Length: 208
Image (cartoon, rainbow, N blue to C red; front, side, top):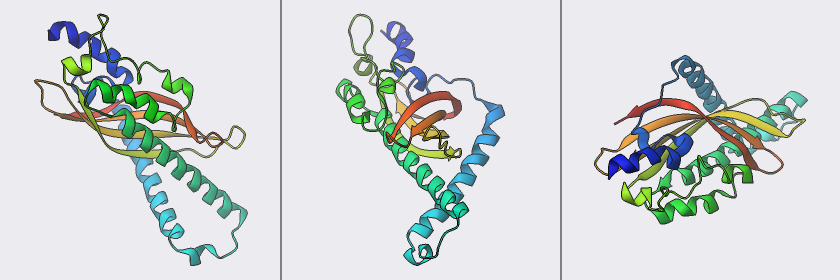
C-alpha cells in the first residue's frame, strides 16, 4: 500500500516537501547564519516597537521624518508578520481530508488568488485513482511558530518583502512525529493587505 501511496506525498505537500520533514530536503547551510542573524535583529526591533506602542506617553513627542519612516516600517513589518503567521497556521494545520480541504477557504483572507491556486499548497489531497492520501497515510500537521525578517518598504509598489522561518510538526502512520523548520520568501502588498508571493527556499532543519 505504502509503495503506491508515498510517491504522491510530495504532490500533496508540494513545497512543504512532506509533512513533518519525513523526507528531508537538502539543508541550505550557506544561508543559515545569515537568515538567523537577520531574524534575530528584526525580532529585537519589533520588541522595542511593541514596548513603545504600549506606552502612549512615549508617542506624544513630535517625530522627525526619519522617526516617522521608521515607525511606518515597523508597522508594515508587524502587519506582514500577523498575516504570514495566520496563513501558515492554516497551511500547517490538518488531520483529515476534510480539514485539508478547508485550508484554502480559511487562507483566503491572507493571500491573493495566485497562491490559493498554487497546487504546492492547495490541491485535492488525493492520488490519481481518487483515494485520499491524507486518510490513507493518516497525515497530520501542526503549526508551531514563525519568525520573520523584512526588507525596507517599497513605497513605489506598496510592498514589503521578507524571509520567514516556519516551524511545524508533522506525522504519518507508522512514523514518529517530526519537527521541521522551512524558509520562505514572502512578498506582502500593503494596499491589499495580503501576501502576494510565498516561495519555499529550503529547509533549515528536521528533527525526528
